Length: 353
Image (cartoon, rainbow, N blue to C red; front, side, top):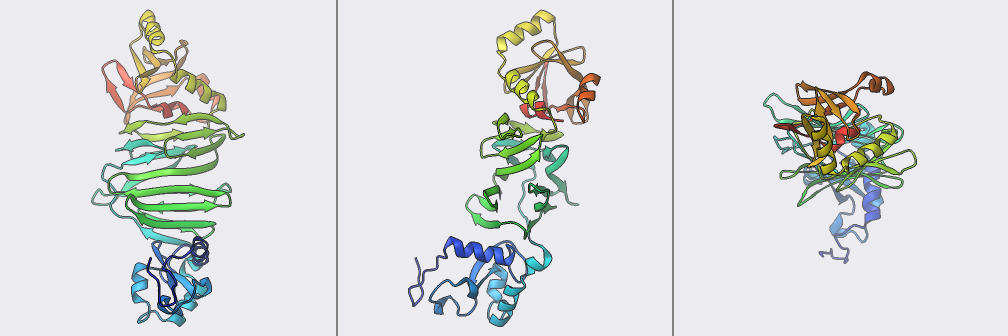
């Protein structure tokens, strides 16, 4: 580890780095850019005996190169007192290098060629627009428990609220990493890379789905108001869907129904389909969930869940009138592939509203 003439290492402890990020509003004090370095103002590093946060600040790479000649120590101390991000209310950065196939991982579930990757309670949370040349523009909205937007990506511009407890943005071999913390710890972690696209590794979304949503590295968990897991989505591969993962205001007990349906013995359901002369099967990764006959989708117990129709985005199932009246919105099952009499269904669709 390199050191200056007083033996001070280049490494700056985590507490000091965090203090400087919070003080600056999580961006360069001069221009507001997210990608920052930790800089000694006066004395500069080669003459410093300690990493004193009162004599340090954060700068982006461009402003760091201008330090000294164009950006004097007096000016930087002035910006330290009135950081650009604090005055504006957020830090920001432009995204580059997004994949043309809109590749997204949400809790380990792969979503490709789908404009809207994540919808919660009928509200888009992660989706894409396109510029005039057809290049993807990422949009992502993440809110706190009091409904304040603490991270907003609008057409590839990342904006992080200065109200966050901590926000960290840095480059790794796996891509550009973004982390947001609250009082209890990390609440959002995602990265963007040329190979994997947008990867949401962790997200805690409170006050939704009659409970909360917890996204981890390998699954999306739906929690009830007591914090118990009532549904889980993992291992899905979704492509060319109207919506990738669509989770809405669905009564908690139906999540249990969905889980039990997913575990239905295939031979029993196939036998049921054959005995009733049904036309085909909805299935999730080979696990049968619904049978089709006469334009209706039936569960393994023979109850009709809704009618089957051909929509703009593929095959859809819409709730029956009686079910529609019980819920705030009709249930729509967006299906992305079709093969003969068998249809491919993603488990997330059972949890939609």
